[in-house]
Amino acid sequence: MSSLPGVGRRTALRLVLNLLRRPDAEVHAFADAFTRLKSEIVYCRECHNISDTEICPICGSPRRDHTTICVVENVQDVMSIENTGQRAGVYHVLGGVISPMDGIGPKDIEIDSLIERVAKGGIDEIILALPTTMEGDTTNFYIYRRLQNMGSEVKITQIARGVAVGNQIEYTDEITLGRSIVNRTDFNG
Ligand SMILES: [Zn+2]
Image (cartoon, rainbow, N blue to C red; front, top):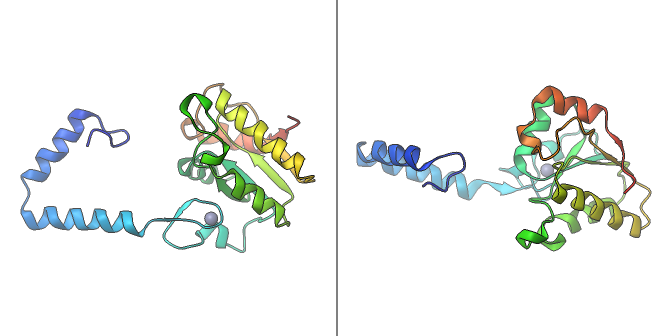
Protein backbone atom coordinates (compact mmCIF):
# COMPACT_ATOMS: atom_id res chain seq x y z
CA MET A 1 0.00 0.00 0.00
CA SER A 2 2.83 2.40 0.79
CA SER A 3 3.95 2.07 -2.83
CA LEU A 4 0.91 4.05 -4.01
CA PRO A 5 2.13 7.37 -5.44
CA GLY A 6 1.71 10.19 -2.95
CA VAL A 7 0.50 7.89 -0.19
CA GLY A 8 2.86 7.56 2.76
CA ARG A 9 3.05 4.58 5.09
CA ARG A 10 0.83 6.23 7.73
CA THR A 11 -1.83 7.28 5.25
CA ALA A 12 -1.82 3.76 3.81
CA LEU A 13 -2.24 2.29 7.29
CA ARG A 14 -5.17 4.63 8.02
CA LEU A 15 -6.76 3.61 4.74
CA VAL A 16 -6.41 -0.09 5.58
CA LEU A 17 -7.77 0.37 9.13
CA ASN A 18 -10.70 2.30 7.73
CA LEU A 19 -11.45 -0.49 5.23
CA LEU A 20 -11.23 -3.16 7.96
CA ARG A 21 -13.96 -1.42 9.96
CA ARG A 22 -16.39 -1.46 7.03
CA PRO A 23 -18.90 -4.21 6.25
CA ASP A 24 -17.56 -7.04 4.04
CA ALA A 25 -19.96 -6.28 1.22
CA GLU A 26 -18.71 -2.72 0.99
CA VAL A 27 -15.07 -3.80 0.93
CA HIS A 28 -15.79 -6.34 -1.82
CA ALA A 29 -17.61 -3.72 -3.88
CA PHE A 30 -14.63 -1.41 -3.51
CA ALA A 31 -12.21 -4.17 -4.55
CA ASP A 32 -14.38 -5.07 -7.57
CA ALA A 33 -14.59 -1.46 -8.69
CA PHE A 34 -10.84 -1.14 -8.37
CA THR A 35 -10.16 -4.33 -10.37
CA ARG A 36 -12.63 -3.29 -13.06
CA LEU A 37 -11.02 0.13 -13.33
CA LYS A 38 -7.60 -1.41 -13.81
CA SER A 39 -8.76 -3.94 -16.43
CA GLU A 40 -10.78 -1.38 -18.40
CA ILE A 41 -8.01 1.17 -18.76
CA VAL A 42 -6.10 0.74 -21.98
CA TYR A 43 -3.48 2.82 -23.72
CA CYS A 44 -4.46 4.72 -26.84
CA ARG A 45 -3.09 2.89 -29.90
CA GLU A 46 -2.03 6.19 -31.43
CA CYS A 47 -0.59 8.35 -28.63
CA HIS A 48 -0.31 5.93 -25.63
CA ASN A 49 -2.37 8.18 -23.38
CA ILE A 50 -4.64 6.27 -20.97
CA SER A 51 -8.08 5.77 -22.39
CA ASP A 52 -11.11 3.50 -22.11
CA THR A 53 -11.27 3.20 -25.87
CA GLU A 54 -8.72 1.99 -28.43
CA ILE A 55 -8.28 5.52 -29.72
CA CYS A 56 -8.41 8.19 -27.01
CA PRO A 57 -10.87 11.13 -27.24
CA ILE A 58 -8.02 13.55 -28.06
CA CYS A 59 -6.75 11.50 -31.03
CA GLY A 60 -10.33 10.86 -32.10
CA SER A 61 -11.36 14.51 -32.08
CA PRO A 62 -11.81 16.17 -35.49
CA ARG A 63 -11.46 19.58 -33.82
CA ARG A 64 -7.83 18.94 -32.89
CA ASP A 65 -4.84 19.96 -34.96
CA HIS A 66 -3.57 16.56 -36.04
CA THR A 67 -0.56 18.05 -37.82
CA THR A 68 1.13 18.96 -34.52
CA ILE A 69 2.32 16.31 -32.08
CA CYS A 70 3.30 17.35 -28.56
CA VAL A 71 5.78 14.83 -27.11
CA VAL A 72 5.52 14.33 -23.34
CA GLU A 73 7.03 12.00 -20.76
CA ASN A 74 3.88 10.70 -19.11
CA VAL A 75 0.09 10.76 -18.89
CA GLN A 76 0.10 13.40 -16.12
CA ASP A 77 1.88 15.76 -18.52
CA VAL A 78 -1.01 15.42 -21.00
CA MET A 79 -3.39 16.49 -18.23
CA SER A 80 -1.13 19.40 -17.22
CA ILE A 81 -0.90 20.71 -20.78
CA GLU A 82 -4.63 20.22 -21.36
CA ASN A 83 -5.24 22.31 -18.20
CA THR A 84 -3.28 25.25 -19.63
CA GLY A 85 -5.97 25.67 -22.29
CA GLN A 86 -3.20 26.04 -24.90
CA ARG A 87 -3.98 23.78 -27.79
CA ALA A 88 -0.85 21.81 -28.49
CA GLY A 89 -2.40 19.60 -31.18
CA VAL A 90 -2.34 15.91 -30.33
CA TYR A 91 0.07 14.09 -28.03
CA HIS A 92 2.61 11.33 -27.96
CA VAL A 93 3.28 9.85 -24.52
CA LEU A 94 6.76 8.31 -24.34
CA GLY A 95 6.16 6.57 -21.02
CA GLY A 96 9.54 7.74 -19.72
CA VAL A 97 12.74 9.42 -20.85
CA ILE A 98 16.10 7.95 -21.85
CA SER A 99 18.07 7.37 -18.69
CA PRO A 100 21.20 5.22 -18.98
CA MET A 101 21.68 5.41 -15.19
CA ASP A 102 18.34 3.67 -14.73
CA GLY A 103 18.90 1.33 -17.65
CA ILE A 104 16.21 3.00 -19.78
CA GLY A 105 17.18 3.10 -23.42
CA PRO A 106 15.32 4.37 -26.52
CA LYS A 107 13.75 0.93 -27.07
CA ASP A 108 12.18 0.98 -23.61
CA ILE A 109 10.01 3.99 -24.37
CA GLU A 110 7.61 4.86 -27.22
CA ILE A 111 10.11 6.46 -29.59
CA ASP A 112 9.81 4.02 -32.51
CA SER A 113 6.06 4.54 -32.59
CA LEU A 114 6.59 8.32 -32.68
CA ILE A 115 8.97 7.95 -35.65
CA GLU A 116 6.37 5.72 -37.35
CA ARG A 117 3.68 8.38 -36.85
CA VAL A 118 5.91 10.96 -38.52
CA ALA A 119 6.86 8.54 -41.31
CA LYS A 120 3.17 8.06 -42.14
CA GLY A 121 3.08 11.76 -43.11
CA GLY A 122 0.69 14.62 -42.40
CA ILE A 123 2.75 15.95 -39.47
CA ASP A 124 4.04 19.54 -39.66
CA GLU A 125 5.43 20.08 -36.19
CA ILE A 126 6.82 18.09 -33.26
CA ILE A 127 6.75 20.00 -29.96
CA LEU A 128 9.21 18.56 -27.47
CA ALA A 129 7.69 19.08 -24.01
CA LEU A 130 9.96 16.87 -21.95
CA PRO A 131 11.36 17.71 -18.49
CA THR A 132 14.28 20.14 -18.39
CA THR A 133 16.63 17.54 -16.98
CA MET A 134 19.67 15.84 -18.46
CA GLU A 135 17.48 12.83 -19.30
CA GLY A 136 14.91 15.10 -20.97
CA ASP A 137 17.65 16.79 -22.99
CA THR A 138 19.14 13.46 -24.03
CA THR A 139 15.73 12.27 -25.18
CA ASN A 140 15.07 15.51 -27.11
CA PHE A 141 18.37 15.15 -28.90
CA TYR A 142 17.81 11.48 -29.67
CA ILE A 143 14.40 12.20 -31.22
CA TYR A 144 15.90 15.10 -33.18
CA ARG A 145 18.64 12.86 -34.59
CA ARG A 146 16.23 10.08 -35.49
CA LEU A 147 14.02 12.52 -37.40
CA GLN A 148 17.06 14.02 -39.14
CA ASN A 149 18.35 10.59 -40.10
CA MET A 150 15.08 9.69 -41.79
CA GLY A 151 15.29 12.94 -43.78
CA SER A 152 12.14 14.30 -42.18
CA GLU A 153 11.34 17.93 -42.91
CA VAL A 154 9.03 18.20 -39.93
CA LYS A 155 9.55 21.33 -37.83
CA ILE A 156 10.90 20.51 -34.36
CA THR A 157 10.29 22.91 -31.51
CA GLN A 158 10.91 22.82 -27.79
CA ILE A 159 8.80 24.45 -25.10
CA ALA A 160 10.39 27.64 -23.73
CA ARG A 161 12.64 27.24 -20.72
CA GLY A 162 10.48 29.29 -18.39
CA VAL A 163 10.37 25.99 -16.57
CA ALA A 164 13.23 25.97 -14.03
CA VAL A 165 15.93 23.41 -14.74
CA GLY A 166 15.16 20.09 -13.09
CA ASN A 167 11.42 20.76 -12.96
CA GLN A 168 9.04 18.07 -13.97
CA ILE A 169 6.35 19.28 -16.36
CA GLU A 170 3.53 18.04 -14.13
CA TYR A 171 4.63 20.25 -11.22
CA THR A 172 4.82 23.44 -13.26
CA ASP A 173 1.98 25.89 -12.72
CA GLU A 174 -0.51 26.20 -15.56
CA ILE A 175 0.28 29.80 -16.45
CA THR A 176 4.03 29.20 -16.74
CA LEU A 177 3.49 25.99 -18.67
CA GLY A 178 0.94 27.66 -20.99
CA ARG A 179 3.37 30.49 -21.68
CA SER A 180 6.22 28.08 -22.35
CA ILE A 181 4.10 26.37 -25.03
CA VAL A 182 3.19 29.68 -26.71
CA ASN A 183 6.84 30.84 -26.58
CA ARG A 184 8.30 27.58 -27.89
CA THR A 185 11.51 27.84 -29.88
CA ASP A 186 13.06 25.93 -32.77
CA PHE A 187 15.06 22.90 -31.68
CA ASN A 188 18.38 22.72 -33.49
CA GLY A 189 20.05 19.92 -31.61
ZN1 LIG B 1 -4.56 9.12 -28.27
